[in-house]
Image 1: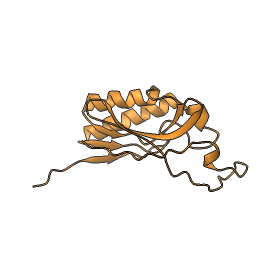
Image 2: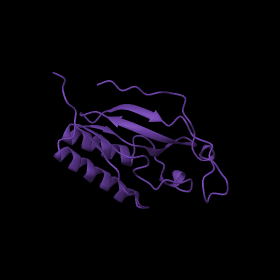
Image 3: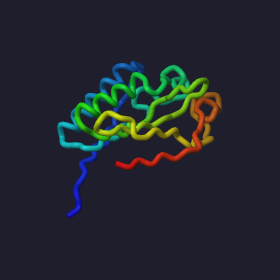
Image 4: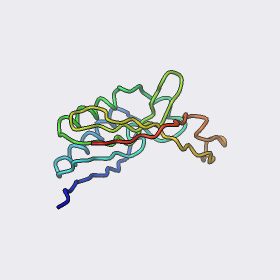
Length: 144
């Protein structure tokens, strides 16, 4: 008989207060754990508004404020967490990065978004995401 995995997919509104966005994500993860979830996935840019004018302002290093919160809650509830994504600062570059956390609170994968489209972004002077975020060339594989 195959074992079952209970998955929670979180969709949430974010505002311009990073600490409140992180706290809200943690609260929703707690609720998912209370409902029996073993794997929880957060949305893209869960800690900040999504937009070219926000990426640099909300960017953080890894480890940082957002990832420390994910590590702590993963360990507390023994969960796997797919951390949606956050704007990650690495030296002078900013990436749209997803982290994956194991039940012991360890980061088991980190993925920097690869396929940054060149579509024009509305209300942004005809710019593209590639002008604000850097792309990765690596693929992340997670094994439990």
